Length: 202
Image (tube, rainbow, N blue to C red; front, side, top):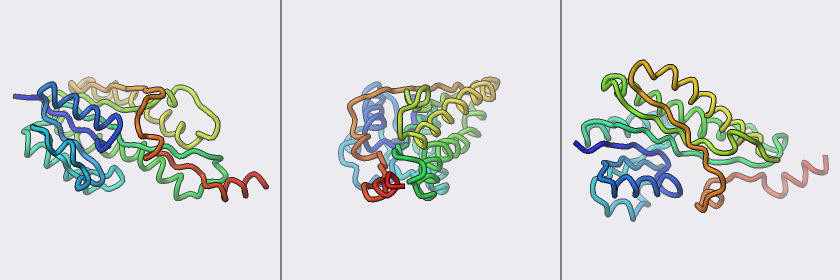
């Protein structure tokens, strides 16, 4: 039986490249994204299930995991890739943006992981790969929110490693640096100029 990977944030960047790579290696791929109706390239490939998963929407997480298991029989790997970066002075960000940053990069990752853990424990096997960042090891100016989430991913991943090892489940962290994707164009949330100017004026 072919192994199966579920990938969040598979519409572009690392997520999409990983989906294509694993498909060429003969894996079944559950490629999840917020707007699957817009995906054209992955839909043409064999052994790929395109499904909606928004890490801030609990029902979509549960539905994607269930649909993937029903389609392929089991899931062997979860790649927590979905995320985005909010950049700017903390004081200038509305709480709505702050919550969105942590709900996407931390709470969404935890909820997706939590949804698949019963399946992994039942199989006594599984691998969770969390996409962190070099920004989970060091910080840059104006990155308080983004770096805060990636430091959180580092800590929870290391703790989960010990928690899940007795059940045969592995936890891995990937820490990319600057790579050529459209993350900056699609997944950055910068404080707008007007808000920044107001902040700088004090």
